[in-house]
Length: 566
Image (cartoon, rainbow, N blue to C red):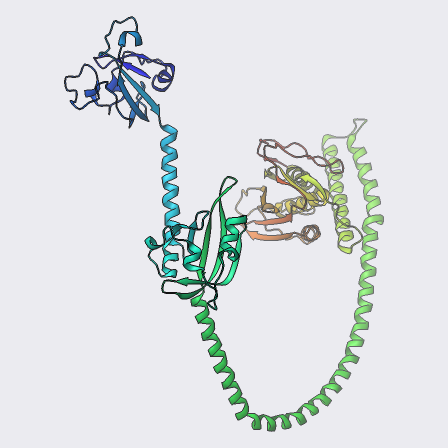
């Protein structure tokens, strides 16, 4: 509420008006009314010499919408009502104005109301356009079954103009009889049951009666319309089946004509077929005897070949078992012992080794560690592939699995060989964390291009970016991990291990070329299983105690982005 004197100046305002109009550092009282309400009729101000003769004697006006302006110049929509005060001195004590000298203005802020009205109008226009564009007939009724809404498609199917249907009883107009012409009681109709119980109905081949009592076969649906919990009407939608029935009749006629033509041709060629059948019987008998002899000879050859393949398989199985024994026992044990001895020498407790010798020993120890890690991973893959071991699924955070895979890759290729750029948001998945981390480690080692000696190939052009990118994301019910590096990959050691682990998880592994680069990219996808997927607001995940936690890389932020050197 705002009080304005005969000069059009604001002399008082309530708290709500101050909050609406007054900006910090500026005052509302003392402002000219037209500065605040530029569209307000100045003739209504008490001191105006141009006051309209037809004006209400008490200066009251109907609510009028206009744009208001705050003291800082910003604008907002309002609804304004004004009235002269009978006793201005009581309304604004202290200034001594008479009753004709003050104008009270009531301003209502419409900021939210205007947006709501515009949205309702837009929604209504959209609904009307949808109803007009729909190919199905749509008819709405009140609780008495009288038509309150009809779209153009419904009027066209029933042969009426839309204006002829308003207020009519829908059942009596188009559902009064069955297909055979017998009466169709209202109580038995799907519309009546929907209005009575609120249940939906779907009827195929329902007959409606159009203008002129012409039968129209339709697929019909009735559904209730509710206002909260109260049933206020129903909507009946229907699709004209006459075009489909015409096509069905045409198809039936074509099939009948085709059958008659086939029968005629069959009779015409019956004699020819009999003669051919007799000639072919003799030929088939001869071929049967010939093939019987060939099959007998083939069975003997295949039996001998099967025996040779069996011997070959047994020999391969023996060599495979011998290789596994060599890797797991004969070679694994001495390598562990040699690594421990090298580590003890590299420790140089007595301090007698040259720094270069100490560095060589550390390098050899790291090399033996890579060998034993590779042997363990190959053995694990062999047991998984042979079925002697199975994956152990547990719910873990995928970013922790990715971090463990990066650490495992560093063990395989050695520290300082490549740089990493990792993006792994917190995604919960039900996987075997140790085996999946092993698979990621071998993918990184494959695209990193580091050979068995721990050396990287030298680019002919000089500098080559040795960054390996690892990115994880959720795609529906699948966890997707992409590993991209500067080298083509395809190592005969790494890739079979990865494919075996991914296959055991029920996932897939794909290889993609990187446009404009010499390297390649692997895309690994495994089902989330019982995992919950992306975790909102989480910073990172933890692995179970059975899986070693990844070392904290440099440059990790709250989104799981990791960058640093391996």
